Image 1 (cartoon, rainbow, N blue to C red):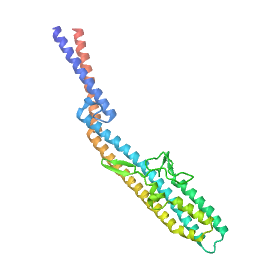
Image 2 (image 1 turned 90 degrees about the horizontal axis):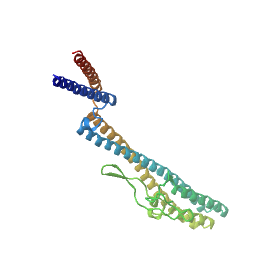
Image 3 (image 1 turned 45 degrees about the vertical axis):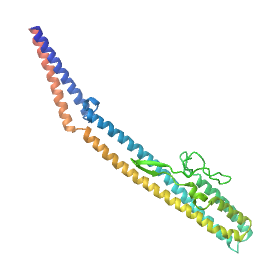
Image 4 (image 1 turned 180 degrees about the horizontal axis):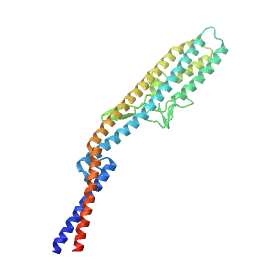
Length: 291
């Protein structure tokens, strides 16, 4: 008899334990909104969730990198636009100085203006984005143009940024091709030559600089166009990454998250089953006590 009662009590304890486990799981799922909150819930689904979470984290990292790079290229575009304006002003100064009616005093004043333009353009070439020099190539911690001589201290290497698997976009434009003879003309040397020619009151030398200034202007425009195009490509990449993140997140939700109504129903059923299990256990124990 004692064996039968012991077996019955063990059975009740097991049933109550199962009911408690069911209630605990139903409560956790209803609170979290996910059918899989730990590996034991569904090992295969949990593994899929880990992979999706990794994909989402990777997409977020790439989106942040793309956003920073877009910002850097937009700064480069704006800086080069300012540089183009400076070259326009320099060409106008050269045209004024080349005029036969220009006096030596006028040319001296123009020389001062041109040297100020050169310093302004040097500042453009040494533009920073955060703590990075944007025209130094991969030597982004090095000032690209030496203030005294205009010598280029950066390099012409391309920084490549992954935006999708197998897809890399250039994240910088060439300071060398924008400002130095690598792009056709050394714009700082040409501005210095114009200033010296104006100081020397040499009309022929002044006239000779105009075509060189036009070439320098054009190479800055080419690099500016490249920067603007690069910024637009990264803006497009950001949109693609955002859409891809949405697709991955939706897929994970379908695989992991359950129907909220079904989760609430299961919680109610689990609670009822647990309460019934407790009531039955109490009743059996009460009968055994009175017996």
